[in-house]
Image (tube, rainbow, N blue to C red; front, side, top):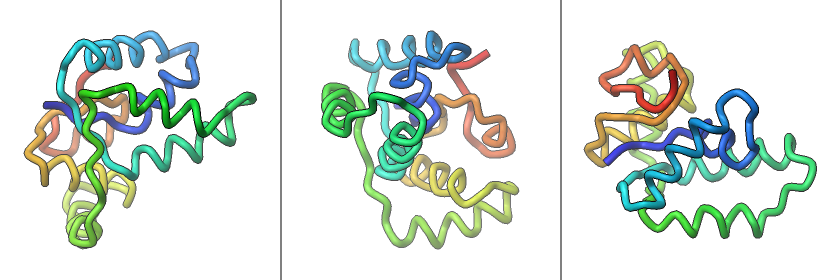
Length: 131
């Protein structure tokens, strides 16, 4: 199982000219049965970013597209994740958002992450999906 960072959803749903194709390939793997996990934080951040960036953003369409990814598990944030994220911020030099993603991934036993965020190279996570 692999963790899906927020940028994958943004690039996929926003048809990003630079990373949209790579994000779509990741999503297609998940649609075909590759098990993946993300955080409820990811969905919230994607909503906030897409609603400010996309001209014709629809919350209903966003929820439908994510719900249709039946092999993508959405993991809730727990209060202990916030406490652990503070440790990961110091240990790996991450911002709070990335530390929360890392904490969630490690809590559920994931060691690989789909992202183009090089900050994860400083962590035990193996970064995948973007060149």
